[in-house]
Image (cartoon, rainbow, N blue to C red; front, side, top):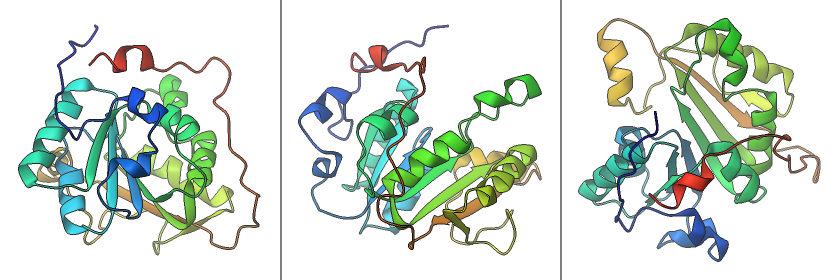
Length: 232
């Protein structure tokens, strides 16, 4: 089913066409560390995070037009000037528009778990994606991941130790209790049912040799939804 495109007139909404002559850092009124949220949903998480950390700038992205609209409305209602919203696919953004060492942190909250075993290769978090994050995260940059699927948390927690450019910031591979982490309405729905949210927190090593992280290219045949985005 093709989703109906809702017009987004918010000044906080950034169309891809604007990035052809404007760097992402220039989208914000103040030069501050840049943080990316992948999959902003309806914006509940990013509003909490940005309000609690006004000295960071936040780019919140999603592939769903309606979610971007709702996120813009929430950010505007909260009166925040340190958040911008884009409808764009994460891997496309990372490979095309983000520079090396440009992000202070990346948050990925409850992405599509593709629960059937035959579909798990479609999950966002894999070695190729983490290599993209390594390129755009600055040394000591943080990667936060959360999911309501235990096996997805286990998969990510098993993957990252194999990539020696990452350092675990938790006493265990994952945790169901991460103090200070904003809880979105989506997460709260599961917690109220007694179903835990699993958190993973890794940090890019600061001692990686200069030039050791090369810019990854999107694999051949990778498809994005870009042709539908700038008309929203």
